Image 1: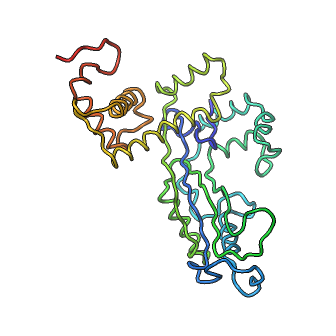
Image 2: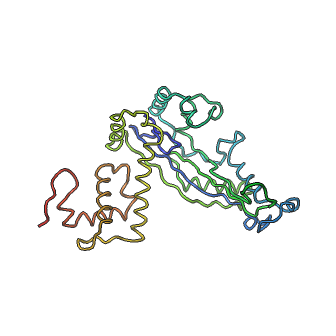
Image 3: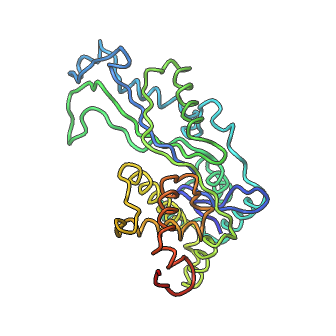
Length: 318
């Protein structure tokens, strides 16, 4: 079973066994502006002036062009691959199984592509998919973007970027390398504003969580769902939800006494306790200290003690 990496999950990275992991994504904006650059306009001006005034938009294009090799694909940031952990032989075997079981033509049709990068064959393209970090342009924003044209020289241009990282890469290290790269190219004025990101997770193939997912899909007769986006969605949504609750709990603490705890507090405590009992390797408690503390206090209440997690019948307190 292979979980599709670009949909956020994949089968990778073991110690001596096998794990499913989510790759890390770092999202950011690269911003070129007349203000930061010290060249070009500090407000949008008429495009006829491009003959005598520098263009922040072209400045951004030049910056983007330095991020990849001449193939327009391979990251060219110095040290970008240094921490990337190679696939194990077991993982390569899993890729080979996936390649044999999933028709290349079906996936190409799904994505609307006729060729893989570098004209690789199906198996080799999958090896890259499951092992290579990437730098992707999500979108470009600058100047006039409405119907037709408008004679404007924009003072500011933005590229929305995502970087997919593999274990053992880190967001902080990669972000620092990106900034150092731009500075080395004489492009240190281009702003690098990180807008989001998260760490990769690793889940043992034999964990209760993964086995429950696999068994469910096999029982439903939809084994093809064992790869592609579903595992990513399950794990990703779970982690995203707990991160939102963690942040909100810090900003707006919930009451945690018998007299004051409300439905929101009960739901949070129960969900956290259940997750920690069933899939602690998927949602590490150390990453959510506020949730962990809140749940511990709730579990100490008489009402929670009377109805412990697990099989059994509710016991009236007292």
